[in-house]
Amino acid sequence: MSRLSALAALEYLRIGAALLIGLAVAPIAGVLAATQPFLLLAVLGAAAWAILLLRGGNSAFFVTGLVAPLLYLIDMRSALFSQALLALYGMTFLHALSQVAQQPSAGRWDRWLVIAVVSWGAVVALSEQSLFSESFSPRRLALVGIGVLPYLWFALTAPRMTGSGQAQALLGGIALGATVVAGAFLVNSRSLSEGLQGRDAWIDTYTIIGSLKNSLGLLWVIGWTLLLGWRVRGGWLLRAPLLAILLTAILFSFSRSSYMALIVATLLLYRRHSLKPWLIAGAIGAFVLFGLPEAVWARLEMTWSPGRGFDPSAETRIELWGAAINAFFSAPLTGIGWGKFSEYLVRTGQAPIAAGSAVYDLSFAHNYFLSAFAMLGIGGGALSAGVFLAAWRRVRALAARQSHRAHVVQAAILAVLASSLFGEPLFDPLLEFVFLLVLASLVVQEGEA
Image (cartoon, rainbow, N blue to C red):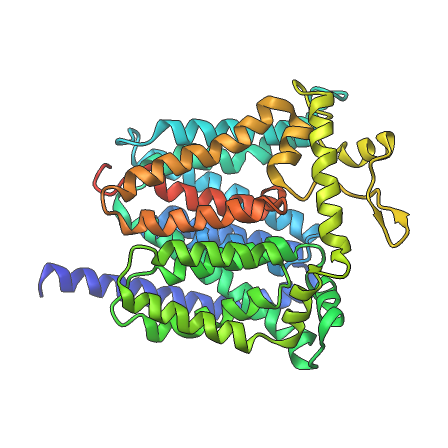
């Protein structure tokens, strides 16, 4: 038996053992899910950590990329979500420690991107907990430490990613996780099952996914971009149904910022290709143009009309952007304070008017960068923009060396940028973590480690 055959046989033995263990554990997991969900979460988290530490390699990165989007299947307002998020952060931190143990010295890596991301994360984590503006407590310090764990993973793990296999596994896990979440959303969408139209379908989206439609829409755009750029021989047979699921979910998210991100990312992926991909993209675009569901068309038509101008949602965004600029100029060095934007609107009388009354419960300005500058001042705002600049510089350098993965990640970054101009997706802890995972694939170039 050749060495390759021996390795393959060993891999099959590992997979078979994992399946047998899974079949034995499944009934126990079912009982725990019905009686002690937190204990089930602890058991599953411990099992995931053990798998990551024992197997390592590409599978650890794939599991990390897969699990992050799947947390959207948990109600974010529940205690279970907080516990699951803590488990995810802990799992990734243990993974980072295992990477350091396996590779004490990192290879060549982009230090500017790592410094920008870690500094940005530290500022956001400290600001969220207001560690220095309120009374100090061990609990507040612990929460800051938990919030910094994803950035520690980035700092310790990304420079030690070896070759393209681990980066591909990481991005593949994100794409698959986003597709699973999209499928779960479509199964539960009354817009599809009951044929809701127009505003009823749009409002129904809120009842399914709360106020996260922009974040989820962007998650699905990221998944679409990674799948669309995936290079696998004969892969279209596998990718086509997954892309259809993602595209349908994006359309029924009724998120206009996600629509723009979808167009930008798709055009960027195809801009340097031959005529054939452009014809395929044109055919898809024509299908979307003439085959859009009536509910989606109604949502788009609500944005602006010659008779009434912008709809209340667009008008509110414009007013909030102006208020955020005013807030920044009122405190350019320190900002108005994290989570104080709604209070600032009330205090200054700049709260937008909707349905005849002022809207006060607005935590952000529907623009990630303006919100960061307004609440965190020049330093926090510059760091928030600096992450994109550092990532863009790195991805351009890799793309110049004909790295296909760099082109795909470049499109995903541009999608996040486009969505951030009309919303604040990176203030969502899960989507921010997914963004970190995408950026991690840029730190070490193929062949540098």
